Length: 427
Ligand SMILES: [Zn+2]
Image 1 (cartoon, helix red, strand yellow):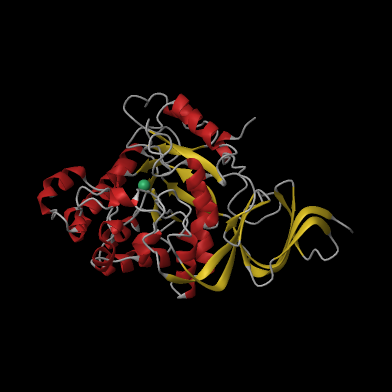
Image 2: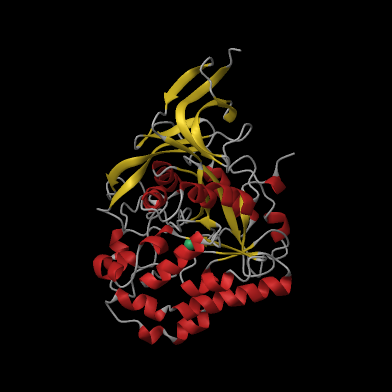
């Protein structure tokens, strides 16, 4: 048999639901056509992947790309460039842009802006409000919609909550605890009780309404211990920064650059979230990429805005944790591709299988690199990990068969398309 493909990835170590092994992957028309020994097959392009690991494309289920409205910080092109530079093949973008993504025209406008301008595939969340609550069942079925980020009222799918990740009443009450010029007081003000109270309230709502709930960016040990008792209704996300940094050290070293909501807390909480990874309680990773310019971040705390870049450093940071023995490579792909596919019902992404989109994150597990601001493609132009040495590096990003990034260069013009969901496949 002499098969012909568009591209063959030759002799990579394929990491998949059936374990890992050295295999070739044949790609045709943007899809995975064949996995196995393809020694007799031919292709327009054969890419030698010897010594490299080929993972299912990493899906970052929480980013803020600031377009429209705040494009001096980031836009859909620069944000997605940063994503593919870091090995990410698809992103889910949040609705807190200006204007907010809460109506059909604002949603369609984002899809139009993203198509063939973003370098990776994408979906957008729609924000649920009191005003649009009756339109949500229709809106959330729009192609390219990842779901509704809403406090309550979604008719199908998951309730997704972010701004309510900490109890607003308690935060207002504790505002005097902020110390001017001292970001170490950030997690004192926004304490673990505020985070736990909000999560408890959400679980109550999920039980009352009979909806499942996805809790974003877990920041405390207590939330993990609480959520393990509620896995029947709740899924949850952890972020690389809550797994990597710890207070007070990060604030002493980085100042307001470490300021994020919910805050990075003590090592005790970081260890508690790792326990959530280890015990299988955490379902997905999201970077919560929330860029601000260095000028904005240089304001004196608490005038400084909360948020940092993260989409480009998710893969290298987590590979470094894999190399340090904190999680297995299998658990990493469970959190970054299979997990998102399962939670959001993504069509044809999230595993390496014949018929699926040829989305791959190609990594060199042995390569040591230093993360630098210069490497970061985000318009914000900085990362809190500048100067950090990691082992494990993304060397290639494939989106629907196209080699988009190779050896830290964007090599193919952007052809990002909306992610397809099982419920909203076009007829
Ligand atoms: Zn966020």
